Amino acid sequence: MPDESRPPFQVGAHVPNCLLPNGSYLHDLRGQPVILAFAPDEWNPAQAHQSSIFAHLLHAFDGIAVSDDTMAAWYSLDCQGPVAAQFNITDQRTLLLLDEQGILRWQTAIGPGQEPRAGQILAALEALRPIAPVAAREVPITSGGLSRRTFLAATLATAALLLLAGAAEAAATVTPPKHPASMPATPAVATIPITLTINGETHRLEVEPRVALLDALRENLHLTGTKKGCDHGQCGACTVHLDGQSALSCLTLAVMSEGRQITTIEGLAKGATLHPMQAAFVKHDAFQCGYCTPGQIMAATALVQDKQHRSAAEIREAMSGNLCRCAAYPNIIAAIQETQTA
Ligand code: FES
Ligand code: FES
Image 1 (cartoon, rainbow, N blue to C red):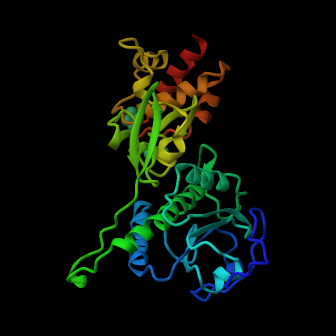
Image 2 (image 1 turned 135 degrees about the horizontal axis):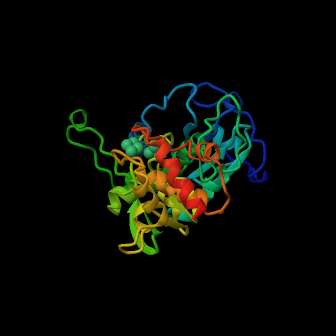
Image 3 (image 1 turned 180 degrees about the vertical axis):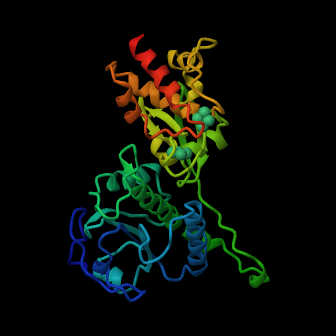
């Protein structure tokens, strides 16, 4: 039972050590973000639902192992169990997010009948943003200040948040299947409404919280000029501008992009008049197959907007995150050099 005389743990506090249901101690998990999702134990159908969606989520991040060295540990716990009592959990649906040092970075409780708000999700993302890198484990790929590892942890947190809210409804409405063994679980993934400002136009759409901006652009809005290369933050093909700065849309959640000015390759030209960088790419024949070209042009336009004069070596270094399989690099550098002297 929670101790009413004790205050709940505050954000910024070191959390107590405790024994988790899998037999490991919480403090042994330091070095990785940990998500603790407390929910009523009687939500068994929902637990299966959670597991299914969690597996679906991890599948979306193909190549990231789910094992002892998982990038973010996620635990679904009984809100009336011993761990909940140690954390003084009083609300039935509560989500805690611990950082690599075991410090409580974010918490939320969802009351009966409440839905999670986009603001809560953004708060989770913001809570993760300043996590100090742990040198040996951090993957130094950033997008809007988030590492890929943090991106994953945030995605799991947001998914868990939605699951906690959705599970109550699922538990209330679920009817047992007639042939459970023959009917695979179909995850009903919750979506949230968001509004994106892209190339000066407002778009309203419904997306799952895990959806990357790249997929929202291409699949939901059919803005296919932004290309998907690696989908892992390594090639630069998906580069767009967020508030005028270069950003990898494959590592940016669509929900994080609300309220920001998004520019894609479709937004550079003014009618039939090409942007000077586009014209320079044409003039210098700075492409062959053209697949990397939208990302190259977006990165290049963000680069030259400070009007600094860079040498070819400096441009090459600044553009090193944008790969070209056709090796059109000399022509790309020439195009960029021309625009910075224009
Ligand atoms: S698709 Fe985003 S960096 Fe490759
Ligand atoms: S022009 Fe083909 S990948 Fe760059």
